[in-house]
Length: 596
Image 1 (cartoon, helix red, strand yellow):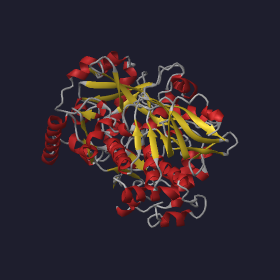
Image 2 (image 1 turned 90 degrees about the horizontal axis):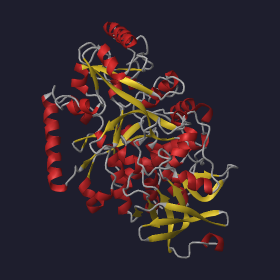
Image 3 (image 1 turned 90 degrees about the vertical axis):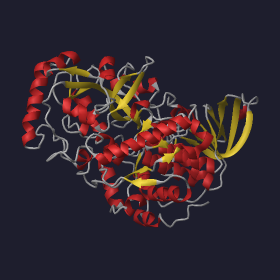
Image 4 (image 1 turned 180 degrees about the vertical axis):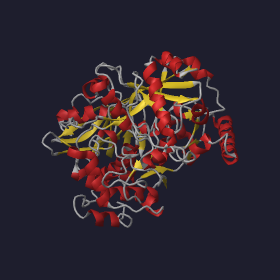
């Protein structure tokens, strides 16, 4: 290390490793695990007190075309179809090099984690691409999820794992996406579902009594736990409460970083490189003001991401000469959220993923008019909200339902019957009216327009077709609907008082505008050249989706894959022909030696 790089660090403790990973979400832990599996000494520096980042709060789906998990479940896919779909979705922001690297290495990465680590997957073959009718789209099979995980397997390390969002649990119980969630919706309608839910609640009560918390981890919490356990298995040093102050440079390369720990500063010298995976910038207010048009005053956006995700990776990259992508049509993955009052006076954030597709729900603007197919993806919902909303006014809408809907499905943070709704009514989270006019008065919605909108909606029920916006017209719409409702699983009347509403605003599931990188996950400078020793993964790397949202898991799938790609390159495992014979690369993924 040069004397210049050493200046001001003489009082710091010094250690050496091969790879330093900044951040402990899926992108960071994937890089750490894959590098350690190749015999490299790895340190993970996590700024927060918990491991797992936004991954631990997420739904946990990973979008990886041609993955072996879905192939075993009978899904047929091709590299060409996936590439066509991504080219269509990304438009003018299509990055051929990175997309080809992802498509070639994604199946290989999934195979590596399945065969060499504690990360195990299950198919989600009915989970459609978000635009399945577009060129190259599929009605299912590109998304997979982590298997549930028992917290006991982490032992004493479990207390270091970030817990899930409390708004997405029930009395602390994590409810898995898919079949398990359907059991909870059907608890009062099916003996089988009632027995299943009773068993889960009994098991959860036992865990609370013995361990003080739920022990069956699901969704993104399970993925984070499995990656964390795998990192520990491979001897990765995982530091928490350890923000990176700055990167260290020598002869034009990144050669380490200065890390602040509780016991003092530590100068980490790296023999191979640094991977930036600090979670993007969802809580960086200054960068949000510049890049989120609806949040110029920092009062129009509410992210469920950890408070520690303040853009550290992007700042470190820029200080090293890297460039943050500025041209995407969307700087983040938008999601409608409702703000949930907590007992301590703070506010939680509830992301509305599934309820919008259920039959008997519409979304209206304050003017009382619909503006979107409510069953479309959360990202598409918010784009429609931006387009329809009033200029210079906060982007907000209301989800409108009636009594049978609320009893059957709940609404946002409000749970279905038999859970009481009184607390949410008293807190003001849930608005109610004995008539639509009364509900309009309680919410500030234009009453005449709301009544006309609901009347038009109800007239369409006989035909089973939403003539205004086509709710229920795609495989993705129907996946989140109710299969027991015919002929359209997303349509039912809004007719039985009382009527209810929850206000939604805009949040995010992570940022798209990250550091520009190449197909090896190497961070690029302003001339498009790799910065030696510097890599990026997860939301610190510019999304290969070009600022759009093609399917469930398009953050975690590439995060896992480019973490793996970065580790492979750091280990000197050779260059995969990412821009060459992609079909051959994918076909060989199952047999390629993934060891060092």
